[in-house]
Length: 104
Image 1: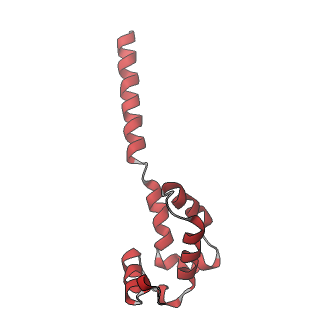
Image 2: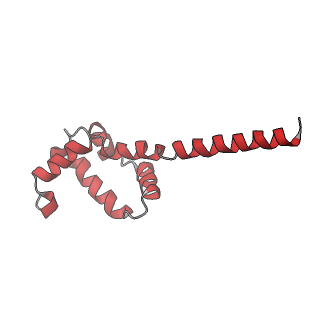
Image 3: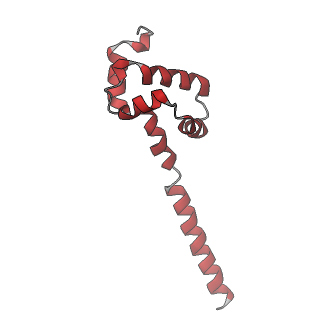
């Protein structure tokens, strides 16, 4: 095998690896979504998902870890949120209770 073929093969492998890394770089978002998965709230209220929180803060460094943990803990324990089946339902409960105005 000559050097040109070897270089071409290395370039193809590098391109494939680069594309694979790019495509799978957002898998953390699937893990993060479990923080707002309503059917997991009872489980999360018994044992907070600290590893998912760490992944979330790594992916979104602008979030305050301590505050996010406190807010999620309150959501997990409150009865009104136990029936939520995802982020849209959670948002609807938040909006319905005027939580954006700090009245809950």
